[in-house]
Picture 1 (cartoon, rainbow, N blue to C red):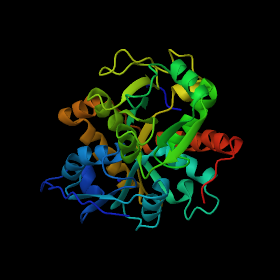
Picture 2 (cartoon, rainbow, N blue to C red; picture 1 turned 30 degrees about the vertical axis):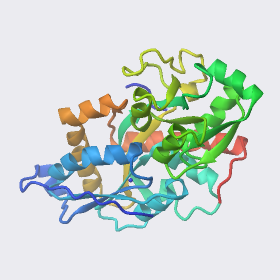
Picture 3 (cartoon, one colour; picture 1 turned 60 degrees about the horizontal axis):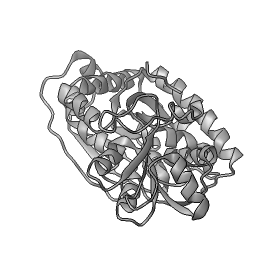
Picture 4 (cartoon, one colour; picture 1 turned 180 degrees about the vertical axis):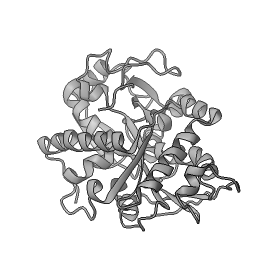
Length: 325
């Protein structure tokens, strides 16, 4: 794990300048880029894609189109990028942990994340928030565990085998909570389901969940990571609650990929363009406001992280016999 150290299409076409840095020109980006988010609009990946796309377009000298292709826990969108032309013009912005889980989860996966996708960079990290509907009579994980012993609690999550689903599974075992899992087509509809009272609890990334907490539509109980969220200073972290390190380090690690086989110069140009976009003060500030933290890496560092997570979360999937066909 790193330590502290986007079925329906929704286009967002963004203008690009006429002058590009030398490294972007070397990448030979000669037409609009597609930035695919494999989850529903309004979730963490979608929010981040629409935040960085304008500056990414400026850096590369081409327009960027954000396209939502949800379904199969992100695998429909990821498959589209894996099978795209190997020219760096089709990108995937996704929850990298959920993508790492896919090979162990789906026996007939139509692509291989390790073989068919090229890591570009981590984009941002946001801790998970454990939240419940305000009507749930619990103000801490201990109180939630006690309540769960008296009645079954429905937990909404972003899809079978997603990062939030697997984290909730491990968290439930650690805290003594037996959830009734209810999958949705992404984090945004899962959060909305709890806010509407259709489910009682949710584990989801802060960028998509925190606004519902601060508005009073959800009640937060805890957050993953080691640092409390500035907007939720009274909510304890998993580290403070003495959770296992795997849970402490869990969260929505958002990363950018393109098709494997894309020339190294283009992958490098994409990496530098994302870093430039995230250095934009308003963009970085907005990510912080919604509970996220800018993180960037080299393609090689991201590749090592992704391989490690594929192995670690794969063990969790196998040990708990989680399957999605």
